[in-house]
Image 1 (cartoon, rainbow, N blue to C red):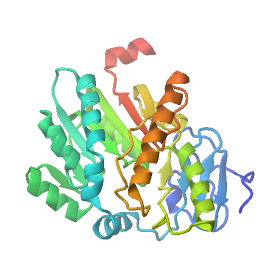
Image 2 (image 1 turned 30 degrees about the vertical axis):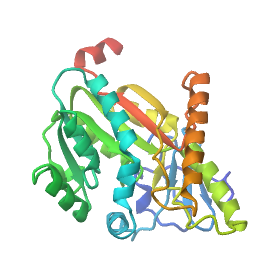
Image 3 (image 1 turned 120 degrees about the horizontal axis):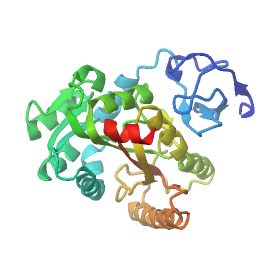
Amino acid sequence: MTDPGDSLSALSIENPHALPVDGPSPVICICCRSADLRKQSDGFQDRLTCSSCGLLTTIRSQDATADKEIERHYREEDPHQKIADSKQAFFREAMDRINAEAGSGRRRLLDVGCSYGYFLEVARRRGWQARGVEIVGDAVAQARRMLGEETVFHGCLQDAKYPPGSFDAITLWDVLCLVDDPAAEVERCFGLLADGGILCIRSRNARFQKILHRLVQAARTVNHGWMKKRPDVFHRFCFTPAAIQALLHRSGFVRVHIENSPLTRGDPYELLRRGRVLDFAKRLLFLMCRLLFCASAGRWALGPSLLVWARKTRAMETTLQT
C-alpha cells in the first residue's frame, strides 16, 4: 500500500478522473478546496482522500468511459425492479419531507438520474409536476412508457437546457457519487431551482464505506460460502458530512441539514446467500446509527448513506444573513 502520509501538492485540476492512475496526481479538493490530498491503493482501486473534509475519490484512468460503464451496469447487472421495491419506504419518507419543506406553493420537481422513473411515479401521485433526467436509454424508454414521452430527458443535466428557476425541488438519489464533476452538478441544480427551492441528496457516507471496505477485505479471507459476490463499496465519490456541507455552501445553498439516510429493505443486490440476515442487520444498524445521531445532537451521521437537505434562499434572506 502507498504510504497514506504522502501528501500531494496542488494544481488547478478539478477532475481527478482525467488523471492517470500511475504516479502522483496533484489535485484540489472539489468540496473544501484543500490541497492536502493523500493517495492510497489497496491493489484493487487507487483513491484520494482529502485530509481536511474527508472526501474520498476513486481515481480512474484517462481512457475510462464512465457513462458507458454506468449504462452497461444498469442494462446487464442492476436488478432495478427489486431495488425500486426495496426503496419504496424511502421514497415515501422523502416525499413526506419534500412536501413539508415545499409548503403550499408551486410543485415542480426534477429527479436527476431518475432511472426507470419509480420515484417520479411516487412524486406524481403526491401532486407534483415531476420530470426526470437519465443517461441510460433503456431506463428512459421505460420511464416514458409509464409517465409520458415528455417526462424524461435522455442525456445529462447539462444538455437538458432547462430555463433557470424551473423547479421547486431537485432530487439526486445516489447520483452525486457517480457524476464526473459533483461541484458543477450542484451549481447547475442551484441555477435551476426557483427562489426558496430545495435540493435533496442521498449519497454514500465515506466514513462508513471505509469501515465496510475493511470488513469485506477481512471476510474474503474467511468466506465459507455465505457471501455470493463482492459488494461495490466505493463509488467515484464518497462524501463525509463535512465534505458535502462545504460543497453546498460553496455553491450558494444555505440551511443544510445532514442525517442518516433510511436504508433499502432486504437484499436486492443478492449479496448474501441468506438475504434475511442482511435485512435484519441493516435494520439493527440503522437503529444504532439513529440513536447515535440523536445522542450527539446531530453531529454523528455514521450510517452507510447520507440524506441531505439544502435550500436556495431568497435574495432578501441571503442579504440578511451576510
